[in-house]
Length: 298
Length: 223
Ligand SMILES: Nc1ncnc2c1ncn2[C@@H]1O[C@H](COP(=O)(O)OP(=O)(O)O)[C@@H](O)[C@H]1O
Ligand SMILES: [Mg+2]
Picture 1 (cartoon, rainbow over the protein chains, first blue to last red):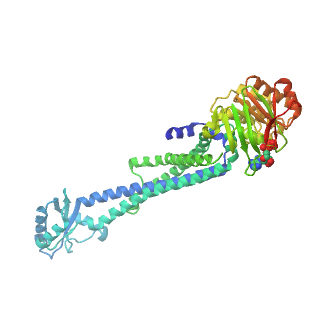
Picture 2: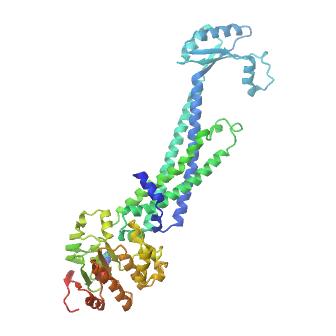
Picture 3: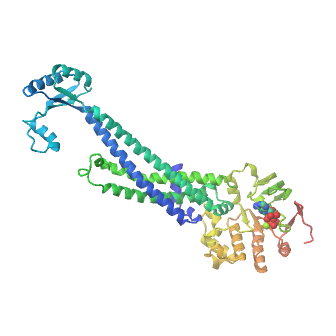
């Protein structure tokens, strides 16, 4: 019923001619819709990107941990073997593997440069632990390592990544809340604009009532105007917002968190929903405003 | 079709009309006279439910006004053609679209040839594309009459329809109303133009009502 009304409002070509066009209200409505859609694109991008980030971090930290073995020269090998033995007999460990020199060099290179003399420095050895299902009991493992290989320390990432995942989740929520707020603000703005249009056209409404127009006809005239304006404005705002995001500096060159801000693959389709959503918001807001005003008239 | 029983109305203060009754039957022809400010316009507005009677009963086409929804009122108004004293146009639309407005809001197709013929009848063929503010007083009233009859209504209520037109045009408008009356429509004309009433009485059997002392009286044969 509401969908049919929306269609009729948009397609019925003549209803809105009975309401004189107001350039001022029209321009303000289009501008507001455009600005809101522009913001909505960013809220959407933020929400999708942080969602992606949270998922990736969560799955990574669920899967891997590192055991760091540092011991005086000569004891390293024994400690390493002891730690591996502990890991082999720990439930929840799918595999454990000592990183070779090349891998360690690759890990350290960003901090110390390529000419690091690995063999002369007391660099700890690293064991990469892949967890199975269910994961390992980190506290139990720590106790056993302390007993059997005192130089081995479990670093299970969870400690520092958990808050990051939480923050990313929170950011995604904030993005969604922002979209809802933008829709609400759009509805409020359109309601104000529609109310002012209804007030300015009191005489038009009176004439229409006198010649036998039903409230639904009169409302449709206003609804059509505002729905089309909101749609057109939101479309323009969406295009600008998407363009702005498309031309963000590339993922590799920018910082780590910002790299994710943007759309990936099918996510580019999401902004397509913004203009229709704005139209629906305008349709409902104008309709409610129109019927409320009309019912208050004799 | 339009039925008023013991109807009273006042704008806030004391009653302007009190205990007024009238029954408009199909094919009837009434004039409503009375001095300026006696309540002729008010009476007509009560008939098409622009005002709601403060006491008494109003019925439109068998439906009590108090029980009518807003949509009911809209539908009833499509069967009542009204020539408003102040005409009530949409100033941004040309005369032709204003005249066709009742068809438009009722979602009925308009026949361009009919519209042209009607405009020619009221002498506005040349002014079809003019905007209402560009019309003279007489032209406005002729356009208002054209709009009032375009839906072929059961009742035509005309509030001083000849107030601003010359005698020749008055007679032309009158003959259009008389013609509608012969087709079975009920006509009620508020006017203080006694010559118009006399001219009409030569063509139809018209009853003359007069508002006096807040009451509606049947005027004598002295006209
Ligand atoms: N909207 C209104 N509010 C208050 N008083 C009104 C209103 N309309 C008309 N009146 C008063 O009611 C009286 C009758 O007006 P009206 O029905 O227009 O008389 P007529 O059409 O016979 O000249 C006048 O005294 C007029 O001032
Ligand atoms: Mg009057």
